[in-house]
Length: 175
Image 1: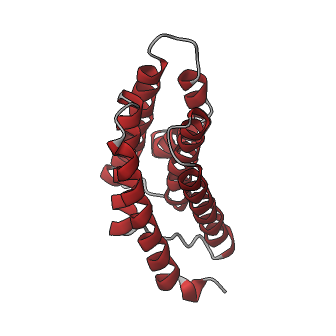
Image 2: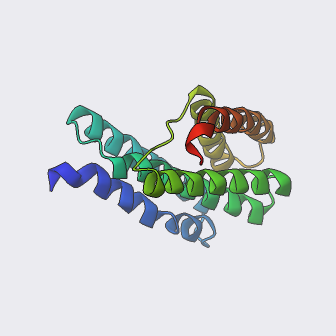
């Protein structure tokens, strides 16, 4: 049981994705703050599963492939939610969703068709993800502060650089 705990946490995070909009769009007073707390909880769960996997040498190909999937699905859900509320420009939301879907399907292709090959993240991808994470927190905390939109632009630029670098580095494995 304990050997599979990081993977159980990852799968649980995938199932938590549809809970975000239920909270965010609820009629609760301060629903955005509750969504922020939920987002932080999901993020803490992500950190916990990674910590447990590394500390107790429970790293698996499944977890290495599914952990980023859980992250990307949550990001897509948050971006869709922000789009519905009109907090971010539509082109940003479409770009992020398309890029994340490409990364999901490419990652799953490599995992299932290329003998559990996993695309490792790089500094650009990690930086973009961290910046988007902080931006999501900021928007949930106070959507009236417009500076967060500019942080999203910077994160998109980093995602473009990361995407190009992933394509260059992993080009040989695509065929």
